[in-house]
Length: 519
Ligand code: MSP
Image 1 (cartoon, rainbow, N blue to C red):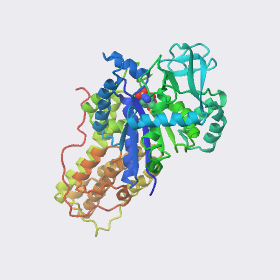
Image 2 (image 1 turned 180 degrees about the horizontal axis):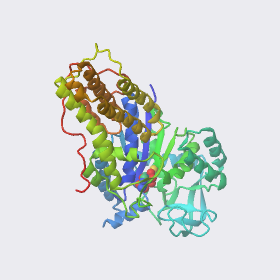
Image 3 (image 1 turned 135 degrees about the horizontal axis):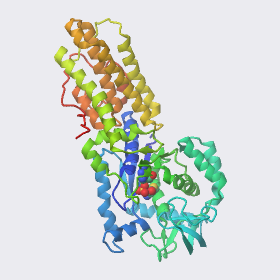
Image 4 (image 1 turned 180 degrees about the vertical axis):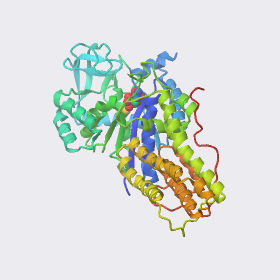
């Protein structure tokens, strides 16, 4: 049995509905998952929701419900997330909720094990605490009493809690990250984590909250007065969702995760706390933690608390699902921050989608209909030397080969740029070879070669864009009459000449009707 390729996303807080930032991770993970499946890999793609803790407790009250009605509140929001993922064509294999019975059982089992192994202990804690971030800070980390993350004032706290021995693993973690360069990506984020670990002393992680202060959480198995700290609870999803510790056979089919995709703001929770939790349990670490950047609006992070969020449902209803997916992964290199604006999405839409790919398909099919009665021309007997056609052929196939290393490396924008180079070459080929003149001059052989080259390039491009824009890919393959079950297998993008002559292509409406900016 081969191991599954296991991809995870963060579990989103359900204190309000999802925004672009959340959908960004989903689209990236879905693209990776689709690409791997297209390549015959057995993928397990898991996502879900983070439903405990103070944020949810507060949101419940803010929604007009009473304390104790948190479950009712979260049950009402989870479908909003699921609906959006389905709208965005996110094909995950499993959706986990931290209020799921089996997840709660796993969290308790983990706490129990670590407590029995002497890795969790109780102590009085006096120090700073950031309530919105649910994070403890030392005097050194916050000399001015301001939260280093959210910049809000901290509270002084004096209470007993349970702590996971974390600091004793600091040296081990530094060595592990140094020895495994692919563990934290991109590289500059790895250096940030190393910088932090080398310069600051780790505190033991507080894994509980007294019920007297906050009680919407998983009860600690060895002390009824406490619930589990929401981050400790949520991080465990990555193993509870695949059966740990109750179904170790299932667990072994997926663990270690191939990649945890997260945003840069939660890298420390993953690269430091989660890693030490796993190490304390004697489990292997995920192969890679990839931290992407933020979408910002007018220089500020888009976030629920700042109230500057863009609703993906609104964007999708105006521009379509595939343009939205395309924009998110094309506009910024994955890992860097990106600026979101409607102008930027419209400009990508009109130039890359309507003009480049949309026009190429439409012009090519129109010419196939006009000059060859809609049939793929037969070029088997044509012996014409066309360097431009050769270049398209080489580049289309080379792009497929390049994608095999680009996509698993999260270089989505780079892969799309390469595909668009092929599209650009094909459009230029039309301009330079002037099929309309070839037709007038009755140069049938040359004309057939041009049209065949364009159709075949489009077939390959359709397969290559599938992970990014599944609906568009399908539409293109249908118009090219190559839509069978196996047609979008990635291996078919590495073979030039699979379009059979005589097959009838069928043009339908434009892929991406132009957006009139003034309107
Ligand atoms: N519940 C925790 C994660 C627990 S994982 C075991 C959490 N939830 S969140 O809903 O606040 O954020 C989820 C993800 O959305 C994070 O990866 C965060 O980086 C991402 N984003 C939130 N706003 C974002 C942008 N404006 N841009 C890009 N992603 C951002 O943290």
